[in-house]
Length: 380
Ligand code: COA
Image 1 (cartoon, rainbow, N blue to C red):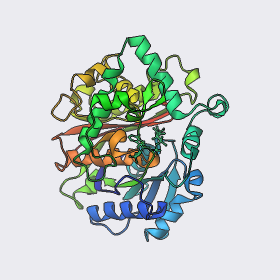
Image 2 (image 1 turned 180 degrees about the vertical axis):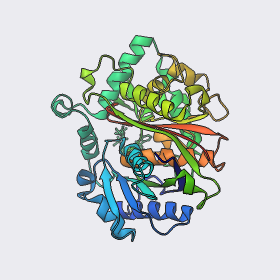
Image 3 (image 1 turned 180 degrees about the horizontal axis):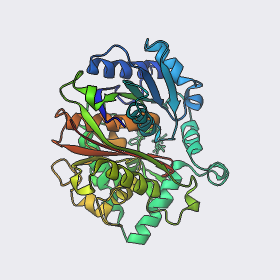
Image 4 (image 1 turned 60 degrees about the horizontal axis):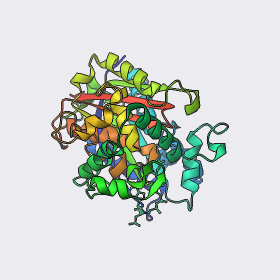
C-alpha cells in the first residue's frame, strides 16, 4: 500500500450564492485546489455529494464536474454517505491512491441546498434517516438529534449551558475565516434564547442549510514533494457504518461508527488520542460535539460537554476544535463538509491556519451516526 499525501486544497465561501450553480461551485473549488497543487490534470475525480438529485434535479456529478472543469475523459464518480458524503469521498480517494490505481486524485465535495423552497430541505435531509421507521412518521433530522440530546442530558445530568460551549466556540473561530457563513461571535445567552427548533434544541445549536464546495488533491507520499514543500500526510483514514435507525442501537448517546472508525484510524496511524493536537468535530448540533469528543477518546463518557465548557476546545485550549468555525458557523453544505474539514486541518498542519499542530483529526458523520469517517492527518 502506498502512503498518501495532500498536495493541494481549495474551497468556495459557504453561504447562499444565488449567482452560482452546483457545477459552478464544484468547478471553482476543483480549480482552486489544482492551482494550489500547481497541476493542470488529475487521473481521477471523486465527488462527495448527498442529494443533488433532490436539491438540484441533477445527478451524474462525476461526468458533470469533470466535463465543466475541463478534465476530459478521466475516471470520475460520485460517493454518497448522507452528511458524511465528503468524508466518504475522501476515504475512497485515499483507497484509490493507496492501492496504486491512480497517481493523482481530486476529491471534491459539493452541495447546493438553498435552491429548494419551504421545508423541502428538511424533507430531503430526512432521507438520510430510516424511511420506513423514522422519517415516514414525520421526524426531522433536528428532531432525531433533539431526542438524542434529551437522553444524553438525562443520562449524564448535563445542563444545556454546558452544551452551548460548542456553538459559542465555533462562532468565535469563524470570525477569522473568510470562507465561513456566520462570522460573528455569539454568547451563551444568545444560544439559550434563540428560537426553539426541536425541544430542547434551539436555532443556535444547529448548523445552517447552505451551499459550498471544497476540494483536495491527493497523491502518493513519495511523489508529494515534487509538487509542494508542505505536503500533508494521511496517517489514517477509516469509514464505518452502524444501523441506519437510531431505535436499533443499544445506546443513542454514543456512536459505534465513530468509535470503530476512530479505533481503525488510530491503529493505521500508530497514534492515540493523546497525540492529536486539533480536531474538526462534526458539530452539526451541539450534542454531536459532546458525543464526538467522547467517542473519539478525548473526554470521559458523559463529560464531553464539561470538557468544552471548561474552555478546553478553544484556540489556545488543550484541544482546539472546529478551528475555522465548524459546521455550526463555517456552515454545513452537507456533501462538502467532510472536505472543508480536511482542508481546514491541512491549513493548520501547513502552518497557514490558526493553531500550530503536527497532527490533527477530522470526524464526519452521515445520518445520526449511520456512516462515520475519521481521518488523521500529519505534517509532511
Ligand atoms: N444558525 C444561525 N442562524 C441561522 C441558522 C443557524 N443554523 N439557520 C438560519 N439562521 C438565520 C438565518 O440567517 C436567518 O437570519 P436573518 O433573518 O437575519 O436573515 C434566520 O435565522 C431565519 O432563517 P431561515 O432560513 O428562515 O431558518 P429556518 O427556520 O428555515 O431554518 C433551521 C433554521 C435550524 C431549522 C435550519 O437551519 C436547519 O434545519 N438546520 C439543520 C440542518 C441539518 O439538519 N443539517 C444536517 C445535519 S447532519
